[in-house]
Each structure stands twice: as structure tokens, then as C-alpha cells.
Image (tube, rainbow, N blue to C red):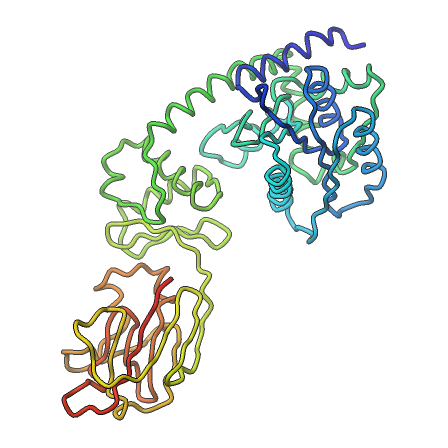
Length: 431
């Protein structure tokens, strides 16, 4: 038996109580890998009087028949429900696999009524994660949270060695992931090369880490609550300037995370903050296609997902776009008042067919009420339309040129007069 199994259970129970991970109404689903951490989690929760269900997820990377059999064996042993799932499409990165794994666990929890999803992260994982974050230039130490929404980590204050000693003394079988021995992975190198050096320098490093993390988490919660929350994809620079440097950094970090689920490192946050004093039009690329753009007195968070498009518009007709639709009809007289989302044209003065397309660099229009032509880009700037929205705004043209920038500006061509017999009405319906 381990030196003091009762003491280990007491530590886990104290973690559960301190972070309020569970209560009498908790229905628990364990993300079960059959590794030592998840087997230890199952045993600890069982000894503490809980009856969790198990969910094993096949990542499609290696044969897992034995692991599925072991999962079902533990289900029978403790009289627990088991769910066996697989990731349908192979993911290329560890982050993508983790995201898909959490999605599957959340789906099962929601459909089966589990209000807690327990994961087997330990204090050992905590130390490794902090080292990884520091080496990657994270803007904060950012430890693994003991609880986030319905996800909980009851083992987060005990080490992996403690767990292995515990379950081996109980004679419980567990699986070993062969990839944990491959030195091509950063976490494995830290586990095998860096952590032993740290523990030799300070044998009490894990207990010190546990105490410090509790302080860090309390301070993080306090400062995060103090920092402003911006839920929109746009952020007013003038409002941001009212805060000091610390709060600005946290506000930007919260803004990015809440809108993209991407956690930028310190270098990226610094670059975004530099846009406050930069010129309009400057931008910072985050990742996954997301960018932060300064447009006049605002920062915009966008993702360039709009592919160039071009369609022929029938009369009458309808074109369904990614962010709305264009509808054309023929009417006998133009209604009043006009609106920005509707334009009227003398059909007899147009050179058909009409085309609906995305904006192209160099586009020009002869604006209504003006002589000569003007670049569409100048109109974007005058209207303060952010760069990330411009490609999505439809351009309507006939064979002679642009007749309408939908919802923005019409041309001086084919104007409706008292002698107009057939009026073309074009509507831009934005979703």
C-alpha cells in the first residue's frame, strides 16, 4: 500500500472542497483514457462515495482494442455506465484533438444529464504546463484551472507519482501511452529532462507550487473581474485609453479569448496594444486567420473568411450570399422614402445582365450627385467601413460599370425620372 492512502484521499477531498468542484447534486462523467491518471481519478471518486460514468475516446492514432476492453472492465467492476466514442476525422494537431475531445465529452454530458466532466490532470501536469507557457512567451503564468464551466480536475493538487503508487498498491491495471516516451514532444522533454533537475534543486517544489497556484488563481480572478469586458468584435480605443497598462493588457486578452478561444502570448498582446497609437489600417495577425485591425478610433477583430464571388442577377431574381441576399423586382413606381438597403433604377437605361460580385482593388463608381468617378476604396474610408467587412459587401454592376455598392452608395446612372416606365428595385437584406 502507499505510505498513506487515506492522506492522499484527504488531499483530493480538500481540493474538491476548496475549489467547490462537486456537491451532492453532481452527476459526473470521467474523460477516461485508461492511463494511470484517469484510473486514479476513478478510484478516488469511488472511494469518496461518487458514482461517475466513464467516457473513452478513440483518437484514431493507434490500436486501442485493449484500452476499450479495460474501460468496459472497470465499468463492470464498479457498476458504472461506459461510453465509447471516436474522433471521426483525424486531427493534425494536439490542440485540435483536445478541442474535439472536449466537444465529444460536452455533447455526451448535455445529452445524458451530467453536470460535471472530470479530467485526470495532476500537479505534475501543472508544473509541465507552466514551464511550457513560460518558454512559449505566454502573457501570464496561466496554470491549468481546477474548474472551468463543467470541467473539473480533482487531482490537480496531487502528483502523478502519488497516483501511480496508489493504484499499483491497489493492484489496478492501467495503460501506458507509448507516445509519452517520444522526445519529439515538448511536454515529454520537459518531463524527462527539466522536471528532474527542478525537483533535485528543490524537493518540495510541488508543495510550493500548489500553494503559489492558489494565490495566483485568486489574484487572476480579482484582476480579471476588474478588467473591462468587451463582447463585441469591435473595441473602442478611447475607452481602452481610460485604463492603465495592466488593465489594458487584461482587457485585450479577455477580448481575444472570448471572441476566438485563442489565447495570445505576451508578444502578440503588446503588438495589439501598439495599434492604439498606430495609424488607421494597421493590423496584427493572431492565428487561424484572425486579425486585429485598427480602423479610425476602433480595433476590429475579424477573420478573412469571405472568398471572392460573382453571380448573375436575374430580373426578377435572388442571390443568396454568405451574409445576406440580393433581391431584384420590377415595380411601377418608386416608393418613398428611400433607404440605404434599397436602390431604384430605370431598367431601360441599364446594360444587362446584372452581376453581383465582391469588391476588387481598383473598383470605381460614379457616385450619385457627383461628377466623375471615385475609387470604391475612398468610399470605404469615408464611411469608416472596416477592412475585414469590405470584401463581404456586394457590388452590383451592369455591363458598363458599378451601379450600386449595396447598402452604401449608388451610382448616378439609370436614375428614375417622371418618364421611367419600368423601375428596377434592388434590395440588400443583411442577415
